[in-house]
Image (cartoon, rainbow, N blue to C red; front, side, top):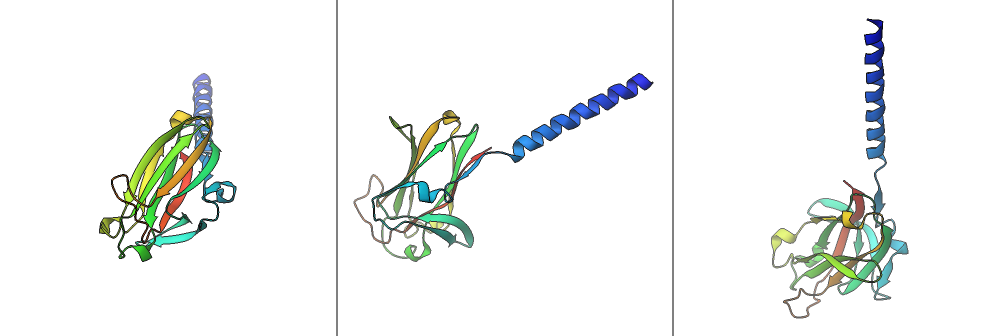
Length: 181
């Protein structure tokens, strides 16, 4: 009987240790806040109006990066294991009811030798009232785990099938971060 009690106690201790390790490991998951690292990012073109701050779209507020159309922001980061890019796209509300063809958002990665496009999205709240909000995007970065990569955010004044039109282009990147899932 005493032997059984010792075995059960040992099993319980092992289970508690494993559960504690698992919870500790989850609690220390990597999170890279790109708004916090904005000052160290490379911004193009030089002199373009870039700013950070809270932006509210359709009642939802995010720490954000406001850029100009035809701009680029580049961060150098080490991608964590099971890393995902999470960002929300939008145009400031003052652009929603004014003519224009929206903004073309592009995100990619580069190792310094080759560029790989991860996603593109045109946001046009004038033409599409459903775009009058934050548009969440999740991108799996696990293929780059452990690698030092450039994360590149681009905006263009028009999508690939549109003629140039920068009217009322006020793009914002909402709460961009790299997290583990």
